[in-house]
Amino acid sequence: NDESLTNNRIGSIPLERG
Image (tube, one colour):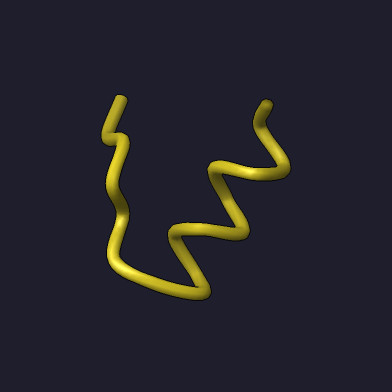
């Protein structure tokens, strides 16, 4: 889920990095 990951990164602290 690239969209979810990007959204999370911009919205909050990145929980999953990679």
